[in-house]
Each structure stands twice: as structure tokens, then as C-alpha cells.
Amino acid sequence: MLMIIFVVSLSSKAFSQEKNGLYILDMVHNNPGEVLTQSVFNDPTVLAKEGYTGQVMNDFTFAHAAITFKKLNPNIFPEGSKELEWVMKAAERVKKNIKAAHAAGIKVYYFTDIIVLPKKLVELYHDEICDSQGRISFERPKTLEIHKIMLDELFETFPDLDGLVIRTGETYTNNVPYHMGNNPITNKEESHIKLINLLREEVCVKRNKTIFYRTWSFGGMHESPDYYLKVVNSIEPHPQLIFSIKHTKGDYLRTFGFNPTLTLGKHPQIVEVQCQREYEGKGSYPNYVMNGVINGFEEFETNTPQKGYKSLNDIKNSPNFKGIWSWSRGGGWVGPYISNEFWCKLNAYVIAHWAANTAQTEEEVFNRFMDENGISGASRKSFRELCLLSAKAVIRGHYSNDLPFNSGSVTWMRDEFLGGIDPTWESKAYTSEGMLYHVFDRYYKEGLLQKAVAEKYEAVNIWQTIESLSRKIAIRDKADQTYVRVSSQYGLLLHKIIAEGWNIMALGFEGDKTGAYDKAKIKSSIIKYDSYWEQYEELKKRNPSCATLYKPFAFVYTGPEYHLTKGMGASVDKYRKLVNSEISDEKALPEKK
Figure 1 (cartoon, rainbow, N blue to C red):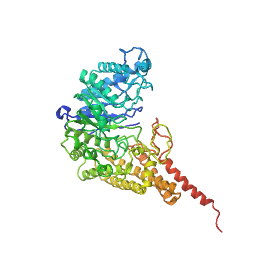
Figure 2 (cartoon, rainbow, N blue to C red):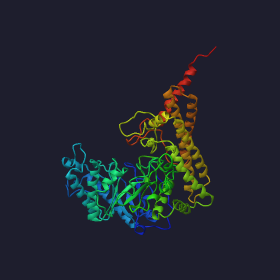
Figure 3 (cartoon, rainbow, N blue to C red):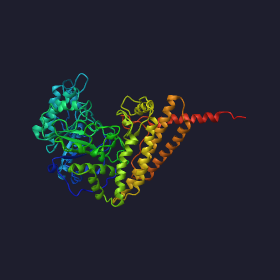
Figure 4 (cartoon, helix red, strand yellow):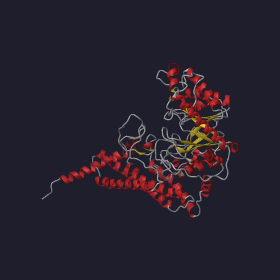
């Protein structure tokens, strides 16, 4: 994918972890298996000037995949082999990244999937490290021994590496062709406890390096207070052992509550925040989320009421709160791909600069962003209004602000895909098709389906205001000014497509249930739907800065396309055929005499 790097306006004052005791980390989350993302946020000198204290490297070529395991067995990566050559080249990249970060004055931590081991190692020691299901298991003593050897060699090879970010649950080996792995959590809480104690002893105690243990996993560690506390209360605290937790109770999705595990226990925690929201356009349209992250989202007062904490402002004075980890870029799969990072830059700026001094208000930090980007005069009011409206538009266009929205259905729209209402799955792999069917079925039974569609049109009205405001905003960087306008048009046209798509599918769904279809309304909506797609495609053709477009297919977890044939397009076409067949039948009738 082609990316254009722009220059970020830099803060006049940088902050360090030593000054306020907080970690302020950033990560570019590259798409697994794809070319690396070209981004200004890859440059540690930019991160240092923006006040970050550390960089999380996540190119999915893990540092622990760039070692040879010679002390264990020299036959794992034999001399002269292509596998050893790959490891040596990967090690050079790791060393280069560490050197660059330190030269900029910030620390560097490598994103680490556990378990990931060389394929040859697993072959040689299979019977000693794998369980009856063929999984590499920490219940086997040899697996623990191998990981101690791994950590020894890792820090001997990269002695300047400041620490590791540990992920369990998801294991991506797309970028490490000679390695394999699996989720180490095979015995619920006990697996976490065993792994954390190993990391604490080998990394924090023995080497005084930092471990950020991500609670993101499968099975409850991330969002169940009881599960979380059972794990962390079994671990002796260490200042270099820090738990990293997403601010959401689940993935980075609206209508998901504030994470209830934050502030619990006696261990330090940092909070993960996504700037390029993978389920909400990835920067292809305005989506300012930091007001909601810092102060609480709108839906926390409507369809997702919060009993406890609802924002970073609520927890910033907790003794466990030790900082922020922003994902400036990335998350999810494929597109939309952007060539202008403006909306990512805004979200990243606000969360990083707020973390540097949490006594500030979100609006004070936002105003400084406008100062540094030359947004002045009447443009300031328009820009602020546009950004706050974008959050309102997204909750109504993608989810719902008033109606119940099942957590299992929120990813009907994700990455570059729009799902449909077909109730049957097209693949055994994870797919987003069928999710809307369950939403529509519930709304239909409760008499809320047309209200749900009306909310999508409400989102369109908000997007129309956003698009109008975008034309009133002057920005010093004219490429950014153009992108604000183009991306606002993108958001408007995309949500017009969504509104008509939902209307067609809702009318068709009702007809499927009753046997009576309002074909005139379906036909009228299809005409609009087709027209908006044409305008959307034309926007991309006419504007080089425009992001790549959404596709009317459901997401399927099978690369490289990540979709098959079902989705919004197929659902709309089902009712298109119904309308067209009616027209054909009418034409076939003999004339009355």
C-alpha cells in the first residue's frame, strides 16, 4: 500500500517518565503479513519531541524470534541455513530499532506474542513440550526451561532492550516464517500465574528490565474483575512488572463499557488507547474519540450506563495508574488505508499530552493542538464542533446510542467491510456475516427495527453538518486542510450508503417475515444506494488523499482478501432481484384490451 508521510507539528515542551512518574508509550501496530506501515510515528525522534517516554515496536517480527537457541541445540538453526540467515537479519533490525530509540532519548519495548518458538525446536522437543492436544504447554517442565533459555539469549543478544510487552491469546506468525506458536493459557488463571511469575523472575528481578503484561487474552483476564484479581493477587508486586489494559471492556468498540479491572489490585497499570480506530474507519473519516476516553462517552449515559468508573479522568488519581499506551496507527486487518494521518495525529496528540499532565482538561490540550496546527479565528469553533460531532455520528451510524446493541454484533462493520443480514455463515473461520441478522431479529420482535433505521438517517444528518463545517476550516498545512474536507465527504457518503443499506435490508427483513414487501420503498432506496456508491467511488477517483474505500462484504478471518461473497452487497442484491422480478412480471403480462 502506498503511504505518504507528512510532518507532524511538534510540541514545544517534551515530558519524561521521570518528571511525572507516568509511562507515555506509543505503538504503530502493523498489519500482520502486510508491508510495514509508513508513518511519522515510526520515528522515535518525533515521539520524543511529542513527550512520549517509550516506543513499543510491533512489526510482528518478534525480538524473541531473532535468536538462535544455540545453547539449547545448534541444530535448531544450523550454520549456513536460510533459516539462520533470516534470524540474523531480523536481529540486525531489532538492534537498529533499539539504537534509534535510545538515540532519541526514549526507551524501547518489543511486542511479544507468547508462545512463539522455532518450528524446528518444536519438532525436536515435541514430546517434551506439547500436551495431548498437540499444544505447546507451560504445564510441561521442558517448556518452562526452554523459555528461560530463550529469555537468557534474548537479553544477551539485545542487552540494551528495555523490556517486553507480552500478549497471550492471539498468536500471529504471519511475519515469522520459521516459527510457530499457540495460546499458552491452557489452564485458565493458573496458566497466567505461571507465565507471569516466570517473566517476573527472569526479566524484572534478574535483569531489572520491564515487563508490560497485557491482560488482553481470551477467557476473562481482560474484563472480569474476579478473574483478574485471582491472577494478580497471586503475584508479588514488582515496580518493573506492569499490567497493560485496554480502556474498554472488550475490544476498542463503542457501546462497550469502561474496563472494570482498571485500578484493581496492587500492581501498576497502564491504559491502552487506540487512535486509528480499526472498527471505525481507521482515519478515513473524522472520528475524534479522546473526549470520550478522557471524560466518558455519550452512550455511558444512555444505552451503556456505567455503575463505576467511566473515563480516564475518573481513575487518574489511582495509585495504580501509571500511564498511557497509545496505538497511534494500526489494529485489525487490511484497510481502509490512509495516506494522511491527520485524524490519527489528533487523537494521539490529545491522549499523549493529556497524560503528560493529567491536571489539564481535554479541551485545553485540544486547543493546543489547534494552536500548533494553525487553526485560528472562526475555524477553531468549527473544528471543535466537527470533532465532537464525529463521535456522535459514529455511535449512531455504526452502533446505536439509544437502542440495545448486542456485543456480539458490533463488528458487523469492521476494517474495510460492511456485513449483511444473511443468517448463515459462509465460512468456518470467524465471520461478521449473520451478526446483523440477530440485531434485526431482536429489533423486529420488539417493534424497534424502523427506529434503528431512523438512527442511521440521523447519523447522516450529523455527517451533513460535519461536511458543511469542514469547508469552513482553515489549517496551516493545506494538505491537512484538504484532507479534513475530503475525509468528511467520505464519512458522509459512506454513512449514506449504510443508511440506505439498512433501510433496504430492514424493509426486506420485514417482508421476509410477513410475506408482504413494500417494493416501491425498496426500489426507491436501492436507487439512492447505488447512486451513493457511485459518488463514493468518484470521490476516491477525484481526490488523491482520499482513503481506500469500504467494500460491501462481511469480514472473514481468512487472508489475504478477508472476505468471501456475502455482506451488505449480497443482502441488498437479494431484494434488488425481488424488485426486478416484479418489474419483469409486469412487463410479461398481456396488454388489456
